[in-house]
Image (tube, rainbow, N blue to C red; front, side):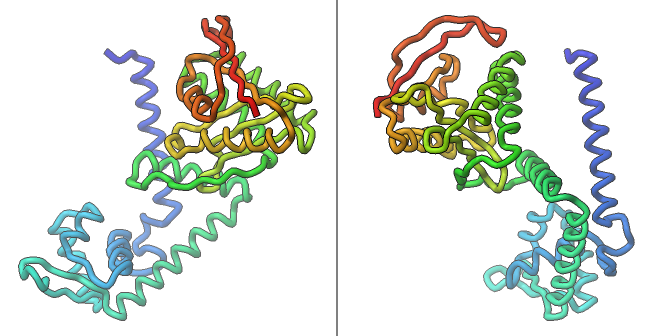
Length: 312
């Protein structure tokens, strides 16, 4: 049986989603008589948009893409046909199927709607600072990923750190390890100290750090720092769950190894814990060897710490 707290939380989430829906429909003008100061409704505009993406389309395909009832779509198409915006004909291979395409007038209306929609969004974004624009788009990406049918991104880039990235590293480590392993806030404090030490004491050419980015947003990181004149240490490897499976972790480790070799170190070492199985596989594949393991109690758990080493 769900607890009362869980029930209250779910009720609050439902209310929050409904509140957002009301806000967004008002912002984009869905409740107005005509979308974007035209005589066409949101649904009619979506039909015109879909038809504008190709020369012609079967009505059954159009209905599936938009999730519309067959009778409702038929009435919409009849109105657009009466306005001279579409043409309908029987299919070449199956006369029972109907094919629809935009007329020149229909394409002109579709262009008008598209241009006005872009201008509306530009106006909305123009009210926000650059950082808030990035936050807004990132939030929309999350909604799209969770509720839509958007394919997973297939590419990523590694880049140097920028202002704000160091805070992201501390935040994401604290969040991810709490959610996935139940580690307490002492781990986030440790990460914060490591990051602060790097910011205050890193040396160009001897220390480095990278951010992995997908669609303009950070999804992973790694640090390579001096331990001794001959030894570098790999630290704070992380890849967000939504970006796992793209090879980002292995690429970050490879970049760390490459840099350590170029910097003249003779070995690269790291410390991890045995519960982090996915990370251990990356280290093994990169050629690291386990040299020591010791039980310890940290971050609110009994763990087994491991020391790994790669000869360069």
